[in-house]
Image (tube, rainbow, N blue to C red; front, side, top):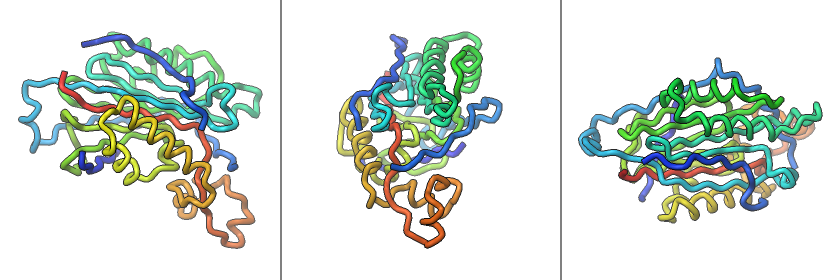
Length: 287
């Protein structure tokens, strides 16, 4: 799994689970595939040799901020995204995005991701998990009884700076560093990660994420709310040429929810994509 590294100018405790909206934020949303852990992608961000001695003998952890804005039509149940953050070891973050198509079978799509994240948050310290995000996902999935499915991403930071990731589907994670753009990295003090559901990355470009994050010092509040608000505003702007609309024009599957008549007459596809929007920002700090 490739994790973008973006250039910017910039002890165990309580594990908690949150899937309720902070604030309330028309295209049909393409169905996502069922969570299949056997097909999950995983990655370990390795050491960058040029910066190895900077971390020698030191430990790092995440300082978190979170924000969730539900789809305007799903505010009553808090949307279909769920997430948790944990300070276990260096920190654990996860986002699950429920598959909306289950509503056609009279199943609440929000129940599966909420239960999945609740079990995952309880299992982060499990001996069998052993700080492996793939094992964590498998055990949480096996314990989940709600009908449904979800895309999901989990990232686990070790105190030595190694970040392990398991990802199924179209949620994502980006690493922002002050003075480097590299293909593999061991996280350093001062680095920032941005994790989110597709409601974020379908509506906000990488350069907007970097410029927004570098405007604030308080990741716990300012970064997450600003990014979520930006995604929400873009999602409702029919004139905004969003990452989603750009991809829809070049990759028909992504834009499969676009009316056929628009494609036939060659109408330019623009606009944001209304969706649940979950944002987690973690800043790497010395512990």
